[in-house]
Image 1 (cartoon, rainbow, N blue to C red):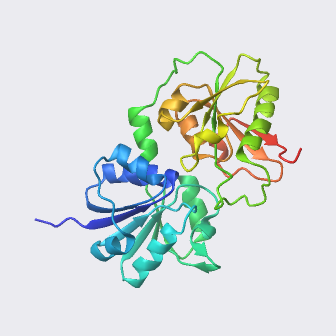
Image 2: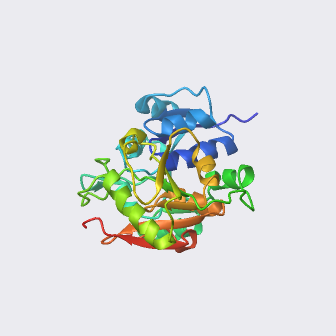
Image 3: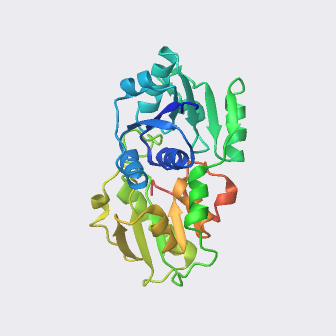
Length: 293
């Protein structure tokens, strides 16, 4: 009888947490969980009653380590560094299509895992370009597979022209967009104006704000707009929120990809001096938002 390997699962950011938690549900190992930040609620929703461990204790007890690649904290970087020092094999699962080198770098020092997993062909090709000496494997995206198996609707029963806005929490001090000098609320107001102009929406159109898992929805509660009726959604799952709306709006958000998978119309709101970091096939329309006016 073979003994199952024990894997230390390390996650903080929401996008990576969705992927790793779905991978756990589809795999057959023993697990030690090192879960922090927005990842905690995602894992507990999908895998109830898990026990959360200290990073160093988990790496000491595991056979190998699997991290996500979010950059909101140093958790993944510390996990890779610690695993290397302890002689443990470490794998990182990519969850986006940008900033790959920076995800493994702190204070100008890069620490790479032994192996990198990509969830789609676009991230796989980018990883091979950025890390030509590393083992790169195309694994498929278990989170997307869950969505397709459990939530996909070929024809949505939504008949409205309502919008869902998925925030990226640019107020977060760890954001990559350090050049932004305006708040998330101000950015949302500018995006609304562009949506109205773009979609020729009338005043009876509703836009629902879905806060990023790392931010408090309350900061939007006092926002009003002469262009749209504004609601807030803090209780529904991302998939449920998306299914109730026709248009999904955000800035380089993974939620736009989920929206496209679910057959919705996706709108990527890019700042005038920024770039789209999502593959074109997941975006129906792009609008340019001038945040300095």
